[in-house]
Image (tube, rainbow, N blue to C red):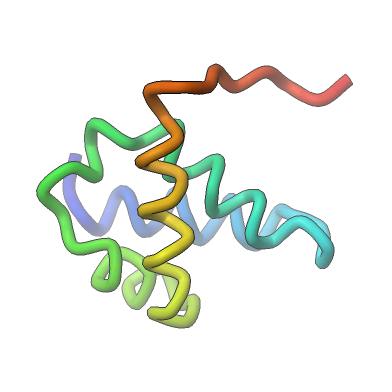
Length: 75
């Protein structure tokens, strides 16, 4: 998956999340797309998504969590 496609997905997830859950949505993005993000610059993805580059850390946290969690949809 291209960096621009990942950034578009991140941008949409970030925009759709409620104010108190912005970081959670970034973690979930990292969990869901860990394989595609491997080898990509998380900082570049964040910048392309139009969010602060400091959120690259939160993307990486999600990526590190990916092997240990499974995502379920909220009730």
